[in-house]
Amino acid sequence: VNINLVRRRDSQQQPILHAALINKAPLNIIKDIIEHFMDSIHVRDSMGRYPIDVAIVLRRAWNDGMKELVEAFASAQECTIIHICAKHGLPWENGLQNMLEESDSGSSGEFVVEEQDNSTGLYPFMNAGVVPYNLESIFHLIRKNPRLVHVYTSKRRTLPVQKRATSSATNRGGEIVQGENLKRKINEI
Image (cartoon, rainbow, N blue to C red; front, side, top):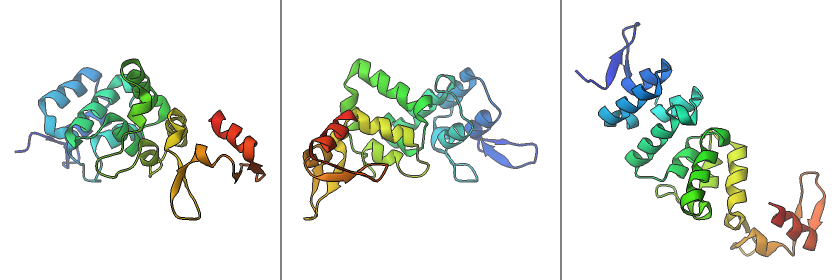
């Protein structure tokens, strides 16, 4: 008998942490399951979802168990919390913002966003751009350190956007922005 599974009314089995999240278990139950059934954090359900994916779909609040799920999942995956938030599409207003603010109070959040993911080699803003993407998260992650954004040059090498400020670019309205105006627009980010 696998104690990490619970039987639903329709006689199908479901991972215990998934069942707790789906049934809106209180924070203390979520914490207890994570603590006592440590393997449950990286168990996938029949649809291939991790508990963190279920919590995001159900819009579990950061202070109602999402923080504990993210921290435990990051530990189990041997990954940084910011990459877990970005990869799994945690909305800016429900976790990613909190996580960056907490890192700002301890170490510099700028350094947190500069870390590349061990498994993909991507920066957090890049991971946030993969499905399920969250444009607000991408924007704030880039804003935290715009030097991470590179643009391909005609010689197939990349340059940071700030160093290309003397060339031109097209803004949202389709107008071409050049020279000092481009530099000013980039610095506004």
